[in-house]
Length: 215
Image 1 (tube, rainbow, N blue to C red):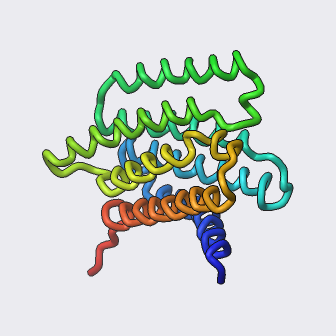
Image 2 (cartoon, rainbow, N blue to C red; image 1 turned 180 degrees about the vertical axis):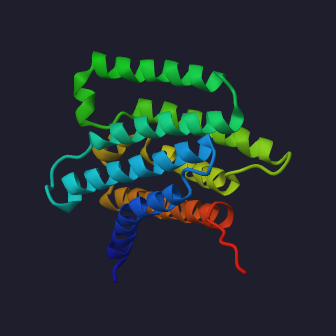
Image 3 (cartoon, one colour; image 1 turned 90 degrees about the horizontal axis):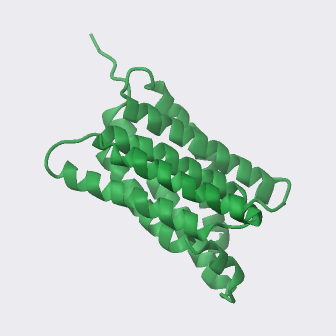
């Protein structure tokens, strides 16, 4: 198996296992708190967006699927903002969410064509804000036992890396980068997505899976 086939396989694994991991989280949905519920919905919605993007792009239709990136980063920003609100209980998060969504909405209103390409500024801002939330929660977790520590570490690593890789989406696609450079960037993102999924699954197995009593 070539390196290209290997990383493509990793990408396929991430896409097809994402709804499975989301459904696993829904096993314990009812009996857990709001932070857990929001994160479970986040996993499911992102999984559906990834499947839709795969179907339109590389899977079957082979059409331009860049517009799915908008659904991805906006949905991610909204749900993870509410997730960190439940963990940090800071009303400033809601205010930042509202202001940021107004800014992103203005982008689409002022330039309708942005829908058919990456939005590097919108992605950068939303990712950076979520990174700040993750760092604040990581700092607070050092002061005592907190929930979702493993997930938070995974999110921090993934968000920082994906920001560096894809926040300049149009540049990566449009500038005269070598094909090998583009492949490396895409493959790094696929690998980090898989690591994040593993950490999400580990979090559930360690802290949220149903515990059955034995006689």
